[in-house]
Image (tube, protein in one colour):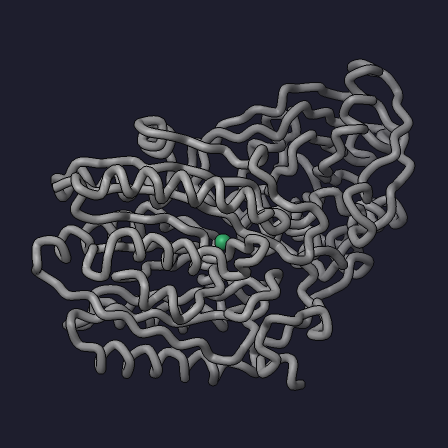
Length: 491
Ligand SMILES: [Zn+2]
């Protein structure tokens, strides 16, 4: 048995200023796909493990991924999907099935639901009966048509996403059983009209926790092959914006429909719990400064880099400085200031214009004077299982500046990097010489995903409602393609 594998992933934020172009994609071809993903905790690692466990040969088509950001220009999408389809056509006579990793929220110019378009085109190439298994991130906005075009869809069950290898392996197993004729997957999808704010995406806490537990229980029932819940992604203005339930049954379409509708009703019943009450930056900084157990991690929701925002928001930093906080560490994307620090050298005093440069919605550019403490190449490795499953990271040239360090423990540490780097690994800090446990206040630009990295080193995590491309309260008037019937928007 020979199975093709491919990964073409991007989480596109339609409120982000800059498009995500071809040069921003990390592209792998041939055996490099297998070599790259094998030591990771990505679902493609699960596909690869499936080859060993279920005894099939791998035929890699392409691996293409970019940091979340603005939509793809049409040409970027066509180039990458074109290569995927060309390789698929060539491979088709020799392969028995396809495992396809798509994020679920790619937006390309002319194709707001680009992953749906990709699955449609793949189905066109392979024909109606070919086994085509798709895996998605939990932040997918899934259109109903995608579930009809794929043989089955399987979505991560955790946020932070730490079960990607298991989902990849699950897809591989079901694909093999489908090819052998042991099972006949039929899918149902439901999309309850709620927004499911990212503030509630944590799968270990309510209101998502009981829903996901119900999905996990259902998956153990006879006749059910897989059950998924996507929370959706509110930073993409697309027709399918919002959560979904996907149930895959074995040959019984009525069972799939019935159970899918049951879980959808459960989600709808939780709607009153989906209205967020979260402190602003001034309040959150005060709470962190008053904490007796430290460090406290502040999650800057409006600049959720993993959700495609700028990475250079200054809203919490501004409050830390204004309120005279001590022992803080903040990372900000600012290649210009990094160069200033490299030119000045270690130990030099620098006057910098920091952050707020990518656009106008992530806080002001701040004038900051400090002493250059460390300079590094910004490369680091994450050996543990963390959100996104990535092992090798590169935040580009990196400087750490001591700010207001009048005495030991006073002031803070400002990490400046040259690549927009979601805070998925604590080694973003440790590799630059910052010991998180020695700080009083850590600021992470994310919502739920950084928990896997920050919970082990923090005594408390406080989510902070800030402005930005990933603000948790973008007004409905700013959406044009999304359904207007979402419950939160009726309140
Ligand atoms: Zn995600």
